[in-house]
Length: 269
Image (cartoon, rainbow, N blue to C red; front, side):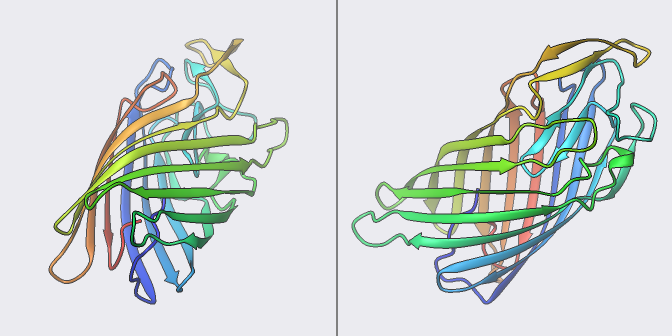
């Protein structure tokens, strides 16, 4: 979720590390990670962001990286989709999918608890190697709204909703996905604590079930990707910000635990 910048510099550079760990409804624990470099160009009523990730996965095949986080595409033993050429369950790393995003600030927070409201559109370029199981190999795009309601000097109510039109690889028809979230933020002396819950529709209605040899033996429905995250962002003496976060999943299709750290020359969101 993005937060409108109150007094933004012309540009912000952000370097972040994200990691998700869990079995994601399969028989083996998995870990996905992303080292993300972002450049945000700020205007008075808009912001344009380019995100370039380096992604890695311990057991490729049953889980894919998407702009909304890990997405389960198979369960049970090691398996792989038709577009993956590397062996099921193999480790992989490489450049991830590049994302460009345009935020337009429709309202900015002001006196009398005036809320902030922004609209965004993004486009994902399929630069991740689908043969290694790092991505879908198809472009897609999304858009949505972000809302922030001040509730006094220190408390904010947060909410956002977005919809992604997902590209389909050969032989697989992925769902378009709805994502929504809500939470609260507490602003205190240059630091922001944020507790946020998020839900994303599954990328497939039915996913294949694999036995221990990687052979499909059936199909099953999969739960939504749903988690809750606690963040702390604080401003450094040099004017940048540090953001730290930890998350836990609320469904079998989500991580057991996740971590993030983001270093930014300006706002962390």
